[in-house]
Image (cartoon, rainbow, N blue to C red; front, side):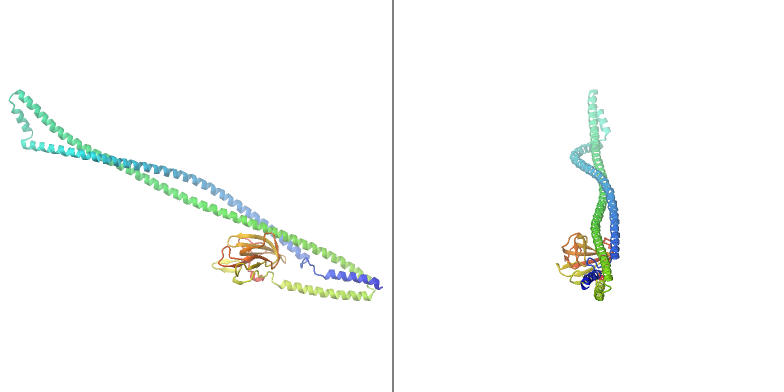
Length: 454
């Protein structure tokens, strides 16, 4: 009888061990794992939607860039036209300057001629004055008549008439020459002055045109600078969107791997549950066969008591674990700044100050979704976590060194980086953020106070 009972007892003990031994692959139930899988799938869909939004943003920015580039091309054509006009205007101004210089040279030459003319006029004025004085003293035309009347004969009168006529013509010529020379001088002066004034007016007009063209060119240059700045801003938007796309793609990969892990854990859990059910059925059959034996029943009761004790111990351990902080303190050092309003802005994490090179540890197990540089953060690492059916992201910024790569799995407390002072930082420290229900985003809409999780 004892020989047949012993194998049954062994089977019952084995079934009890399977039923009450905690599952090693996961401390979660199948339903909890399914909930986690469902949430991970939702987050992947959200990531996909974000990718589509970013694609639209990039397309829109690139479209605006094309329009901006067309405007810049149009402005360049206008600027080229204005610059050509400015060059022509400069050439015209140079020509006017040359003409003015030539006119000044002519004026200098004429001034010399005028000096000679004035000397000649002075001589003629002297002769004319002498002649007029002589005429005044001698009675003018009466004296010419006396000369004629004093002729001795007709021949003498003719000779005297010729002489008087010659003298009168000479006087007349002297007077006319004086008047002509004086008028010529005045005409020459006026012509040169008019020519000089005309050139000056043309020059002033060209100077005004030049000023207007320069003003137009300056306005076009300002507009061109605005378009170039706008183009650069659009370029930054595109680069930022592309960086976010890379980050979301990495987060999506981390979520996919987390989903695979959860599915694998669920499959293992279900397989172990099935094995436990089969063992339980076998144990039940064995118990029925051993029901007639008091020894077998006693052994079964002892085994059941032991299993119940183990189950109670495991349950207590699980409760203790659930009460512990979800995340651990990521680096040694003092808390130098907290979550919330700071210096007129909002601080989305906590700062932990210590020397450059201080080890930085993963605050929980997860997968690296980003490892690189980012505006403001300097060297930065982002880790995705799936904990108790929820997804989280932790960010570690201002690092001096990064020791993990995208896609790498990390465990809680594992060293992943060194503290530093990169990016926008006023001293060596770790900037640490926690984002609930999804990954990090530029708006930091999921950021929460990390202190509630330690």
